[in-house]
Length: 326
Image (tube, rainbow, N blue to C red; front, top):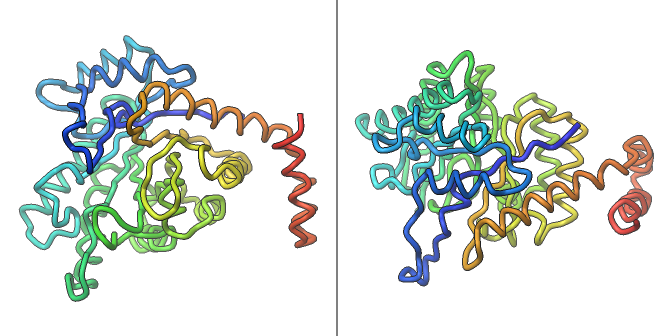
């Protein structure tokens, strides 16, 4: 079983420094970002955002460029953070006009996915949440959010999966779908086969989770639809090179993907700042590939036997041998 690696086109956007705004570069066009992704050894797929498709860069042109570079589209994500219309909320917005506009973006992502041959879209609900006590009516907000996602899922069914991305904070102080438990609860309440969860390694760390456990939790429910990799120091969404900080947690996350025979893509979703995005992405691909290859040396049966003793030393001996020897 091989690890299929994709990269979100945002990786090649040049990064954003909220402090040194004057140093920020203009975001390259989608065509330029696709060209950059095509140069990365080990990248055979890309994730695009629904906003990458425009009258200036229609789907037919996107398909042509993907074919030219030998790339496939792994998924289409919906990100409302850069859109001023949804700064206060998107799917949970209490004004029908704004909420309908957000739902239309979800439909657009589904249409794009169908046209380029992808089977998944990811909804990033990062502007749906609150900042202050008494800021929103929580029950009404949840009900509205669920209704909006259902509308998109029905439109996407039966051929497009809808993955819900969770995150504890940023830009909202409290993002509504903030943990793996809330995300799975949302899916179970919606109760549609094509609605699942997108797990982001860094966001799981931010939420105080062990990413491997969250992967196992979602796999058990057959709701792990997408997996994103970056790295962080847990307090914020640092969007660093995967494997650069939390090495052991990354290895365990990959182990549980391997045990689950995960068939989707491992999507690199970082934002390199002050470093060359292409160089950073190549390191990211290398890190994921090296750890995946090391896991081939892992005797899963031996590890399970050690885990049954509940003695952490026994499992650490096996991990140390795989990671640090030879």
